Image 1 (tube, rainbow, N blue to C red):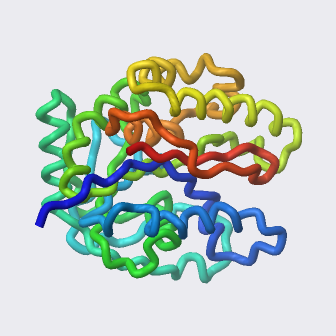
Image 2 (image 1 turned 30 degrees about the vertical axis):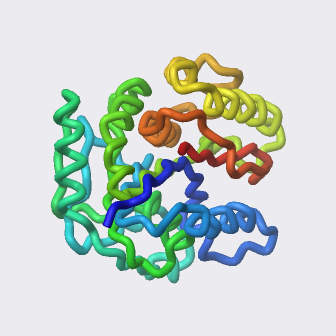
Length: 264
């Protein structure tokens, strides 16, 4: 059976295990609702999911190669039950190998880590979006040199996976300054950057690539991302598409503007 081409997504993964804790103020309600809506928005159930996480940095790119990946609870200071969360989705060693081959074929460094588990940038949002854990998941790292053009090129190289029914997801945050969350002084700057990044994403692909490569010069760019590891998954998701992106989620979370994007 042939697969229908999957879109690519850039999603916010929230703060730590936020979706699985008491949230009396409803800070994460809207984001969780967006994540839960993803499955129904897809053209068909993905054959596998490749998630680029801002929480894994390597020299070159790397992919998880375990057939049954463990979980990495890489957050601290949260209730004990959040360290007992399970997400038992299978891995996909064949997908990891193919993705690595595609990157190598484009002249990039790519390795497979057969033992690394899924970090919270993957298993937390996937547990919300695909709670049945019945779709194979492979995690992809970001390159520690943090070059936006390299990550966009990686996305372009991985684009053929979409035609095989693989859903490519960039998991990060469109605003990621830990000092800014909950601080009203960051509301206006975060909104300025959010408007800029949305306009860039919605541009035709060549203009989009140029704009995203220069994200640090955007209004409040460095204020929104003192370090860009949480933005680079967007570059991969955008690079894997030759169509203008769409703003599919947006709200003010902890007094900062947060967005999510889709690329067909």
